[in-house]
Structure formats: structure tokens, C-alpha cells
Length: 609
Ligand SMILES: Nc1nc2c(ncn2[C@@H]2O[C@H](COP(=O)(O)OP(=O)(O)OP(=O)(O)O)[C@@H](O)[C@H]2O)c(=O)[nH]1
Ligand SMILES: [Mg+2]
Image 1 (cartoon, rainbow, N blue to C red):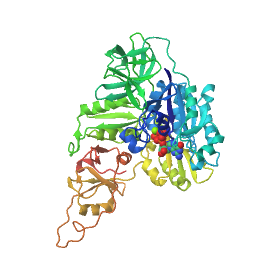
Image 2 (cartoon, rainbow, N blue to C red):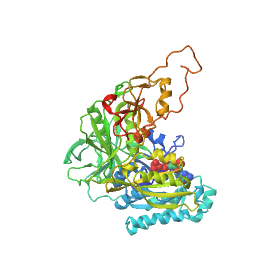
Image 3 (cartoon, protein in one colour):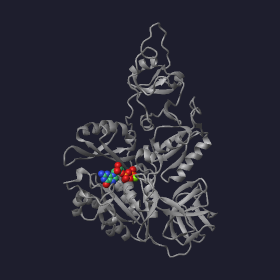
């Protein structure tokens, strides 16, 4: 069969998954109702509207089978893009016409160029109002071209074909002159034909001149019936169900190991489905079941076949400590796992995600998970929580190397009126402004900062507030640089419960004068639990359970006192941003609480920021 293996890469939100919807359209049966952004199949992907993990699908263009991998665009999931690059020979690089190339465009393009992929440039969202009657599309193409040159693409890669697209309406064209007509009259069918033709022009999968079967694992999935599923590209030969084959992997020490296993089932992609096939052939992307020990980067091959180099990805720059739940309420909401289970669960996560690593901590019931960003950690925590587990996590910290610390290049696009506030906020956190550019209309500015990752962690909510939700922010890792000394992060102390019990409205109404509450009346608290943010820069122990002395006078509200002013409900993301080094986030399926690591008030002392 004729095959093309391609991926789709871009900065976050530039429209990858939407374009894949339309490419896959022909594979859906007429009676099927298909969700928008069908590849974002995970619950958290749907809720957050972003892609988290890279996923495969396939569609037909005439007689040619196209295996396509949709990838995430957020920098925290860069490892997902890196690990699928070995599966494909071509890439569609999407760029939002109005936003132009952004940090993650550069990151993914660099990876594609290094892997010698042939690239199609797709300028997307040409329907955006700001693009009309402007020169933005041409500027976008020029900036993309400059990026290719800067990243040292080969002449052949620099000679990329271009399509101008509206992924949302499912059409594209190679001619700029055709845009007004297409915008006025979007085609109902066949709108992506120009892109399809370019996909067919991409190189065929190179099939090694060797009849021995060889396959590399780029992704893992799980089936309740079959256990682990290895997803990857077949480089040479073929494989049948019922055969014995070898897994060439590595042990914990990184030494090569070889395991023989029985091929239980083989599948390949048809649309978004994995369908059983009797045999897999070189060139295709397939799925193998038969061993529970599969790991990303392993080669599955006949004994004599070539063992491929393992997948290399950028190293983690951050870590977060995970602990068993030692809070007084442990086990009341969910399953309070023990040390061994916590370790096994985190190990599973690391096996499935090459961008993560597990590191021992000083005590046996705590482990460091190393990764790339707060969002990545937040998603893993939420996933474990939804599995019914209880545990605690600490503040994300950066990994120091030879006395140096990691840096980010942060690109901000903000309304002009908030530029001053945003700038001083990032400068306070040791950010150095490296560029400041006003938009042609003059109402927005693009600012680029180079900032220690430590300073960048925890800026998201504040950035949203400063820009009234209208700012765009993205970052790319710049590697390691000089350690910048103390960075002033949280200004406020914590309001801490000094006993266990139920919070009363009476007590909270007077505590709220000292700061901002995180809890409401009636909520259970325990000694050492953080119930709010102190207005001052110092921690404060308070009694949130104090009952109102009975009087004969009763008034409107339940216990005759004021209604509480405002409560700041702390989402998981907000807790991660807010947390200090002497605090834990206690995560259970039902609640998220912040607590002091040392619960007993008189053992703790009161910390001043
Ligand atoms: N105006 C306009 N909006 C589009 C177009 N294509 C996609 N969008 C919108 O852009 C948003 C992001 O689309 P996605 O397809 O999720 O983007 P993505 O690149 O897959 O995002 P990540 O996977 O999270 O990086 C959605 O609201 C889409 O409806 C387009 O051609 N025009
Ligand atoms: Mg997506």
C-alpha cells in the first residue's frame, strides 16, 4: 500500500486539532455524530480545550493511506512532539496568520528540521478579522522563512510549499489571490484538496532494505484486555499475530536487555480507530500487544535486526515533590495510597511520558517527579485525583545544574494599557526585557523577557489579572544560565487554623479582616490547615471554629451575623502558584487544601516572607 506518515505541529491554539478534524472527515460514517476536535479525546483535553498528548489517526487520499499524528502545542508538552518525530517523514507546520510564529513554533520546527522532515507551511486562520486588509499573511510567511533559515534548515526544507487555510471551515488554497473568493464563499466539500496534494508529494516512508522485522515504540496505550500496547513505525519486514519476537529495551541501570514475547494482537489505524489486522508491514504505523514491559524508545525486532537509537528528548528543568497524605483527614475522601503504590503510580506515568523522570527524595514516602512545567504537573495531579487517590504535593522548584539555573524566554502579547504593570511584575521576578514591539494598530504590544524559570513559575494568574484576561503568554526553555539569587515570589503570609473543627461564620467574619479567606462556613478544618491569605507578609494562626456566644437576640442570617465578604476558591493551578516551600497541597478526589508541612502551631514558628 502507498503510505505517507506525517505529523502536525504548531504553537498552542494555532488550529492543529481543528485541521485534523477536517482531514479525517472522509473517514467518518454518515450516521456518526462526531465531536469537534475529535482527537482531543481525553477528559482533561476536552475540559481545557487543549491537546495534552500526541495521538495517531489515519485517512485515505485516493489509494494512499496517510498516518497523521496530532501533537500538543503547549511548551509543557514539548516531549510529546519530540517523541513522535521518529514516526513520520513530513510535517505540516501551522502558523496562526494573526499571531505569526511564536515560541513553540520555533521549538517544534527545530525538532522537525533536525529530524530532516519535509515541511509544509500552513498559514491558518486567514478568516480572522485582523488579518483582512492587512499585510499580516505575507509577514507571517516571511517570519516563518526567517525561522527556517535561523534554525539552519536544508535548502530543500527552506523550499517549503505554502497553503493558506481556514481550518475551522475546512478549506485551504495555495493562491493568495483566491482568498477573498473563498472567504466569501467557503467550499462545502473538497476544501482541503490543495493540502492533500502536497501531502502526497511528501516522501514515502523509507523502508530499510532488510527483510527482518523492526519497529520502534514511540507511544504507549493500554487496553483492559490486552495490557500495554506499543505504537510505532515499522521500519522493515513484517510481523504476524502469533509469532515470537524480541523487545530490545533497557533495564533500570540503562543497560540493554532483550525479552522474547508472543505477539498477541496487531492493529493499525483506520480513522481514529485501532482496528485488528493479521499482519503489519514496513512503512506503516502499527500497534503491537504481547508484553507488559513495553517502554517508549524500545525496538521490537527479530533477533538479528537493527536496534534503533533510543528517543532523546530535552531534559526536565523542574521538579515537584509527591508525598503520601499525612494529614489528619487522610483517607476520608479517597484512597490514601502508601509509599509503594505512590511510587508505582508515578513510575507508570514516567513510562508513558518520556519528558518525565522519577527521583528519590530524602524520605521513603516522598518522590520527586521531574518535568517541564506547572501545567504538566497540574494535569498529572488532576489525573491521579480522578483515579480516586489521595496524596500531597509541594511547590514546583527548578533543577539546578553546576550552580546554574534554567531560564525561559517568555513572549507576552498584551493590551498597551497593561504593558507597564506587566513589565514591572516580570522585572520584579528578575526578568530582563529583550524586546518591546507595538502592533501596527498601536493597541497591543509584544514584549519578550528572559527570566529565570524560578521567576516565571506561578505568574499565570497574576498575568491574567494584570491584563484583564486579554494577555497572551508563552514561554520556551533557554537552557541554563547564571543563578540569580533570591527571587521575591509570595508577598503574603498564610492564615492558619490553630485547631480542628468546623469553621463558623462568626469566627470567619472576624478573620476576614486579616486577609482573604479560602474556605466557607461549615467547612471542616484541622490544625495547620491554611484557610486564607494573610494581608500582611507574615503567617497568622487563627481560630476559625469559635462559636458565637448565645444571646437572646436572633436576626436574619442563620447565627445572626454578617454574611462573609468574599472567598477566593483555590483551584489546583492557583494552589500550585500560591504555595510556599513550607506548605503542602493536600489533594483528594473531593477537595484541594493547602496545609503547613508542620501542623502543630507551637512547633512551627511564624514565618515572615
Ligand atoms: N478563526 C479561526 N479560528 C480557528 C481556525 N482554526 C482553529 N480555530 C480555533 O482556534 C482554537 C484552537 O484550535 P485547536 O484546533 O484546538 O488548536 P490546537 O493547535 O490543536 O491547540 P493545542 O493542541 O492545544 O496546541 C479553537 O477555538 C478553534 O476553533 C480558523 O481557521 N479560523
Ligand atoms: Mg490540539
